[in-house]
Amino acid sequence: MTKQVIISGVSITDWIQAIKQLSDSIEPCYWICRGEIKNKVEERFPNCITHQSIDCIQGRPVKEYDTDEPFYHPLDKDILEDHLFNESIALKMMDRLDTGNVTNSNFTYGGRIRHFHRMVTYWEMVLDDLSPDLAIFGSTPHLVSDYILYSCCKSRGIDTLIYSSVSLPDLFYVRECIDGPPVLSSGTIKNSGGISDKNDRYINSLRKEYEEAIPEYMTESQSNSSIIPSLEGLTKISKSVIQNAITACEPFPTAYVKEHNNQIEDSRLTKYQWYFYRLKAWIYRRKLYKHYRRYTIDPDISTKYIYFPLHYQPERTTSPEGGLYVHQYLAVNLLSQTLPKTTIYVKEHPSQFSKRIKGEQGRRPYFYQDMSNIHNVELVPLKTPVFDLVDNSCAVATVTGTTGWEALVRGTPALVFGNAWYRNSPGCYHIKSQSDLIEAIEKINSSSRSGPTIESIKRFASKMEEICYQGYIKPYEGDNTQENSSVLANSIIDNY
Image (cartoon, rainbow, N blue to C red):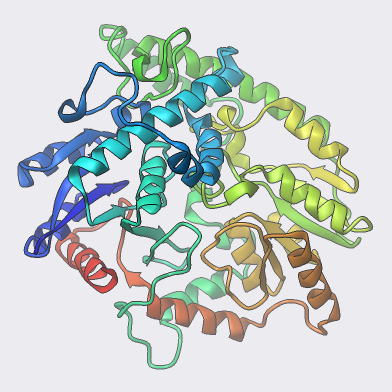
């Protein structure tokens, strides 16, 4: 019997061919996707309902489920209680839809909880009608719409598969829930008792100078992180404005933020409004950076300290993968209260001020003031060398950040507050409570060698190779589409 599947969060067309390969066993009944994928899905699967991602995020229904009623399904006490934990995460996730830090037209609690309730009722109606057997998420659900879909599936006992990348090159793994470990599978790399040459080279590179070890996403981020646009950048902006002048009143295709004086589902920013907002956002980020600098001091790396690199927000790595520690000040305060005699050095993520992305949605000036007012917490300048802070610390603390993995590779213990892919690595301590933190610190202090050995890290990486798939779930360079589609199809067979 063919299983009915809902698909969301896939960013490459390889998935279409992968699902086509499994047509004897699964059939897509609802697919949330961007425009360039949407047309191909409709061509290959004419009976599948397709939902444009932007419409889905903003709560605009597909025509098959469009009604005049503001709510689609009754929500009783039992349903609401099923969603209580995820409600908190989803409301914070709606920072992505809010321009309030820049425009003062906040997406208030009232508006956010209304959006949450509307989307729960929508997905409850859809799931009632379609009765899917499985939901596949091509990345951790983190765009409100797919996160609430995930929450509804879990409350109903519908199987879910979540695809996640790791820092090890060209590998991904599959899990059944956001806070769960990788699902054991046949994998695609068969080791002969040791780590592959590619990952051995990668891990060795992390033990070199930061310029050689810097992750690719950080290279891209830093190349776009200047607070003041370059002349070349201003020229590109000017050309873009001129080219779009004729269509200035048309909706901007990828903007899904809430519009002033409109409900979220009625918000459609024009190109003119979007460019004007981005200009104001750039001004805001400049002021935010100056405010951050006001509270920074040069660190003394000869003292006893823990290094806490902040995550860029809003982003999947903390929302939802950080759970309640999406509020990073909670983790920092827990460290401070538990270790009153140890300095906590906190460093902002450079991307928070980048001109390329939307860091204005994730910070307000009081965030830095509150952080600096926490006992024994010090903010450090962006220019402070990352590996100097890592190598001389007692431990690196993070929600799910790559810096935690880099610390482990370089022999420094890591305290991880969220669902990082490496949380079961040697030298890594998964912190959920203060008692977890106390126990971790005691183990670190009592060990003659506080951090993991490089041999133990390579053994862990080898084990990850055995349970991961060699392939891609994000856009990649190359023409191995057929091969990657087969890898994706096999991963579904293995795990479902």
